[in-house]
Amino acid sequence: MKRNRTVRPNLPHHNFEAPYSRLLTLGLDDEPEAYKQIARSLAQADSDAGARRLLEIVLDESYAGYGADDSPAAARTDPRVFTRIHALRTLGQMGEAGRIGIEPLLPLLESEDDDLREDVPFYYMDMGEVAVEPLARVLADATAPTYMRSGAAESLAEIGEEYPDLRGRIVPLLEQ
Image (cartoon, rainbow, N blue to C red; front, side, top):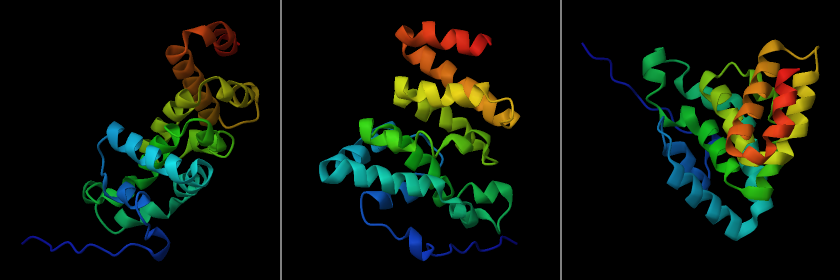
């Protein structure tokens, strides 16, 4: 007998107006065009305010609650579980306004959310050169958690791959 799966309503602080509401519906797949469209829409209104709101969404751990009562496989069918990842990917498309996340997102390099943790280096790649110094500080900090340092190294490697002109600066950091 199949169990009827009921969909819980959004938490009150997750009831967004467009274009943020679209982030709740994207699901597991990568949606590059959607991220660009949402970022363009936010930039037309107020880039800085849009980036701040996206950062709040990325940092809000309550999205994991949408799948909390289900089996692990079933939890991944509720698209709201992936809202933070989509907000992160959109923030990466926000250009200069997206830089607001560089320092606050460093702790996510060791997030328990595997999907989110794996995406953070690509956000830093999108930020480019301005992310090198904060990541280098984490990498050089022997007191920082191992996974955080590893994530910083991975992020620097992604930046080096995307921006060959920065490799001369990044490779020595990784070699240390």
